[in-house]
Image (cartoon, rainbow, N blue to C red; front, side):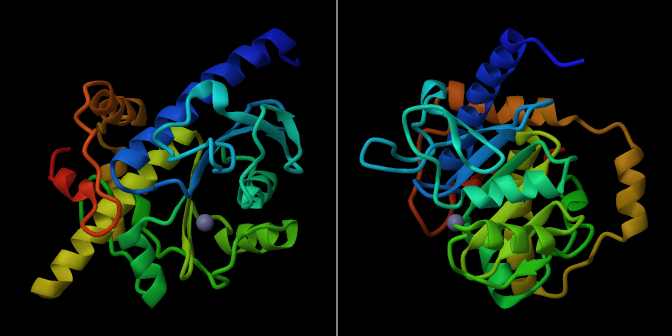
Length: 260
Ligand SMILES: [Zn+2]
């Protein structure tokens, strides 16, 4: 049964808030700046809530308020909002079209994860909490250009296949999940993993967590994504994430601890 229009509107409004918070978290962790975008599929519709294209009045991902978020359809056509969609809207439309299980997408140019894609080196599962994201090496889409056409979006979705993350080599990364919160946490956790891979490789040969152990850990009593997302949101709310550098050593390095 279809939801009444008022219910869909309420869901869209909630998703606008979540997409705004997701962008702010990524911005303040140094994983995105004015480039990059988060989106959420509006369940049961062909609508997508997404950050608008950056412009002289739409700035960094940390400053786009919920009422500035836009709604588009699966062809990238505007449904609601005063600003236009990002040039790379086809990352979102074509992945949502190809993968009905995906409800949230994050695209960033985050440095350390992108570096591993640039050299075609896998990010190894070496950190307990984050390793489920990297149980398999991420596929690499080998066109550095903007994903600004349906054909490029389709090729990217094909490269993603049944994975959750895909490198856009020499450009950035696309993270997906059942929700935009989970796609956001994938971006954070994978950057932490990439950092620890980098550090560990300076010291020696990293010990990799075996696949069977990752599967076993996944069956355990793990903290769910709402708790983890709420933690990062609380950092925003308390101003703990207010300091941010543009490039270089990302602030996320400060959060590279082994807390479960
Ligand atoms: Zn991009």
